[in-house]
Image (cartoon, rainbow, N blue to C red; front, top):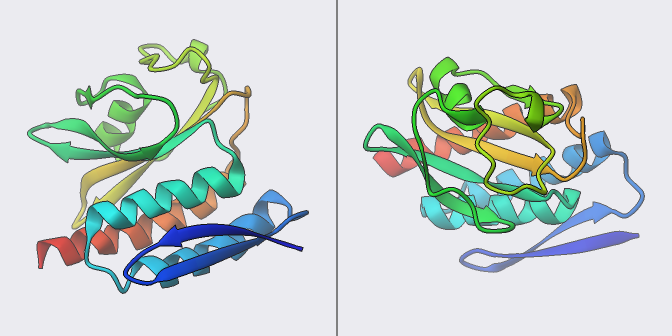
Length: 175
């Protein structure tokens, strides 16, 4: 059985994820469909919003969204979940550290991450993936869970793959 995830673009699209899929199977089903949906459009914000919605719905994450590099800080972009911090400085919190280091960071317990920025006390673990264009971080994908140690190498692998495809959206924006 497939659960539909309804996303809107220029035309209405459906994304289907098998109901009893493993985490890896969900990513393997979702990413090609997301790429097919996102890449034809040239609207960065709409694409990031749909990407956030699809990830949140497919995996029931606590919070998922993007922070965009603007004026030498990370500024809140499209997201799904409770309200969030609106700006983050370079090197601050998990998002700022990922931006500064240009690497994916998995945090099993946000309470153990020195300098963690608590936008929501319900968030217990986090993964942040940089979006890199021309060797420069232009945004980060931030995903939070209300469970400890929720993220692993499977999330890292597939979210990094998604980040490469999302980077193409920023390239199209610059054209």
